[in-house]
Length: 271
Image (cartoon, rainbow, N blue to C red; front, side):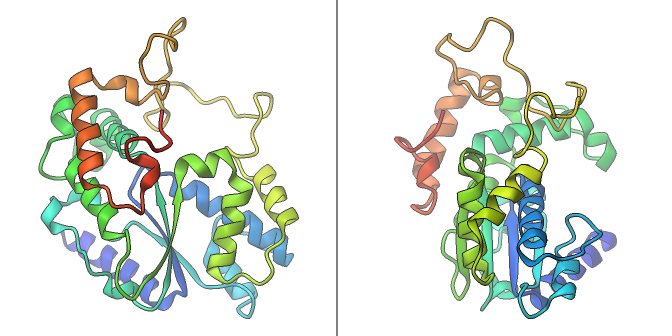
């Protein structure tokens, strides 16, 4: 507990000292956005950076043109009950926040696999089923939706919303818009395109993608051979839920997600 307290205190200090913050609930792909932005700034400003992904280093190399950007998840919301999610964002007041969201159903399923397959690393192994997990008090689906709502339009904070799905559909455009929002001077479309090519995941092709064992808890489950046209969702994680769970999750999203997340509402862009 004391270790977590000081860790959160250090993270809060970084946020207060920054010009902007990249924020996401765990399992939303924040490191992918960070790496994409890091590559873009290095290319755009022609910086001799050495520590890949270190946005603070880029700021130190050119403080006049590069904003000081922190990275975080707002005090580990995945370990909180819904009523413990802070609606006020005092540490971020007067600052810019790029908030990365992902389909909440994929996020909660990913967290379940993280806890049920590799949770022993953090001494928080989860023994229940996926159906149990989504309705737990601590770190539940309600916690996740409450967290999204807290970042919809917080007072005295400028927020730019990005969806994980759109980031992967058109990474160059989403990167360009984020760069403009962050105040990076005259962002170049060409630099965005080059950054996409040079960033793992976004720039990978079937021939260049690294070979990673499918047993990794950080990868989405595969769709079994021969399946995919059986009326079930095409997204691998959504296939892990039973029909009752999917209906419940859909109802929760439609009832509680704010307008700032239209891409996850009914009739929005989803699988």
